[in-house]
Image 1 (cartoon, rainbow over the protein chains, first blue to last red):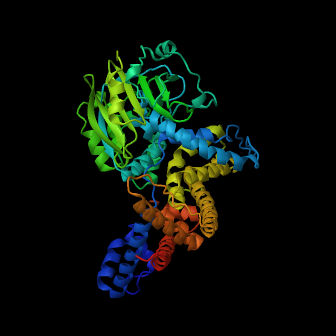
Image 2: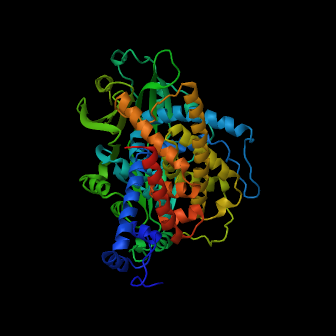
Image 3: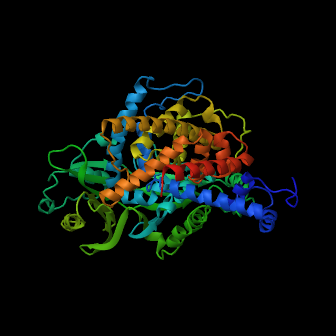
Length: 406
Length: 184
């Protein structure tokens, strides 16, 4: 390596230094910069060019990364890789089919994404809102629970998330598989969820385990049909099993070999239970497309741990993952009654929120920034409720307040 | 730290491996594709094509995740650039026919003239990107999407020590073109 005392670093080395990327001894570079007017001019220009690019390209970024539900929907739309073989590439469609299916996919994806957006604010899917970053798919059969339910959702609190934080959280939690094994429920068949069979109110009540109620029809605005289509989204579990050897190898590869990993964490499994949810979907009259109003009713979200670690210890470990935004971690850590408070992440660039009351039950009211959609989430009698639709907040709350909750 | 020396591992369950790769990389690739294309539908379609190619790439899924990620970014950038070029040609045809539609892909609450201005600015940035040499454009997009030098090097197939040089050139080229084509 040449001495910086006798030769100036090139533009590439200075550019890497500006990004704090590995580029040799940085103290020596800083000393050289302080003593070399030529390099000072070069670094000034490099910094200016970087700022221009950052400003221009920054305006291209999306404000909304795909949620776990969006990813699941996109995966479902991808017809091919159900029959993969390592021996020969196998696809379930021909090359001629692919472009056409892609065009169809884009239309169905938009409708499905819209459907998911309203679902996300409804009933037990309110739990999916809080857990989308953990890639929970709420479909699948409910599995037998073997854990101590150390967490039960009895109330909510908002965790405000900026666009930058959303991206950082998404990327950080996608590295969870480097610390162990993540198991998310799989679909048991290829049936499109929009074609899931409609059931009666009685059948839905039987499947969710409590009496599902409808709002008073008189409270429904004229913009929605009076008779809902009722579907049941089966409950499921997401499991994360911490594996010390895997975690150690990953941390070492990231230049952090000295992170303390207590032995009792090895094999500890975090289990998140998503309850079965009944969805009452009201469409706009005369249309078969987007739902105007969705009401979701579900049991509680539960979280527990199998193995030697406690829930608090695994919670603290996950909050300590590198890359999680400090403001998000601070908000979650400040939740006093965390063992029964469900954090609801709210993207502040897209949604406004306020506390509300539905017949004595405290909840949250969310409005998207376009002003044409709203959602309300609350808990009553041990059940989660969500109302969401293309309604103004007053109209939505009127429907919620005219629903006889058990 | 990327480890490209790992030997291929036989996969017991290729479908599960594909699902895991899809879950891991979809969202970040979406961010990259959206920056290039500015449209959710276009970004989603590009990703569908990208992952379809992965499903055809026998042997690739046996590689470690960082390698597969680099490959996916490469393919996503290539497909996205092709779409952007196709879109530019379509716009030029519409301009000639006097039927250009400035519908904005953003959904904010600004008025029509502000939306139009922002849409024009974003379109101008993307057109400048198209004028850059391929490697410079890709390096710029990757860096300003938050990727580390090691990831950029793996994606572009260059030495990590070359990323700074390429990025410096890319930003210089971008600045020159941007200030020439987009007067402030």
